Length: 244
Ligand code: UDP
Figure 1: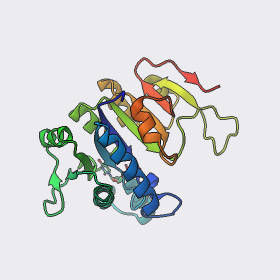
Figure 2: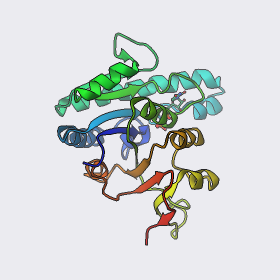
Figure 3: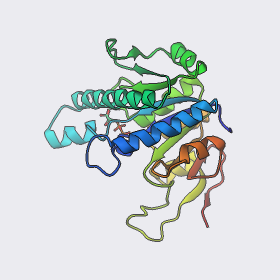
């Protein structure tokens, strides 16, 4: 295994599968089986879950005329629903887990305590971080970068529905090129959609590489942990290289 401690970012959209809303149970069980495999192999895994499959603050604030901060708090609560659902699925797959939330709700989860999270990882428990960073105007991508830095993760796995980062939208441009590797600076200057700029800047400052890959391909989490060249690797000094 190339990596010993990994921060996996699961977007709400990834959990949705082919549905328009909510969580696809098949996706959930296939993710859980893969997570079980990598944990069994000795990898320490922390997960940040998104909430976009249920509620996205900025979108709802605009469409419902809702106060942005209030909408973001609802978005953060949505991530907790995903976190608890994922916890249940992981435990069914035989993985020991803890959920820690950035907004205290001690009846359902532990509060986020950095040292405790690290201790859980050392004991081979998967730690699922819910409620984002606890602050409105942030995203769960930024939370992933923050938590990865805090727990000293070697890498962030950004699991999505596409097989990496492209120079333009592959759904709109049939000639779009996928990058094999690229650096943070290129992502920022070219405005490539990897993560939001706050998240990228945080990764850059702390030199945390990001591997972007397709979660819907079975076995990809295991391949990414082994360091097999799937998807796109974003790092500080990575050369900008396209596939083919
Ligand atoms: N959110 C927030 N602060 C955070 C993380 C998330 O306010 O630190 C809110 C925000 O409204 C966001 C929603 O939670 O739209 C769901 O998170 P996100 O959109 O990042 O989920 P994803 O796109 O990964 O599914």
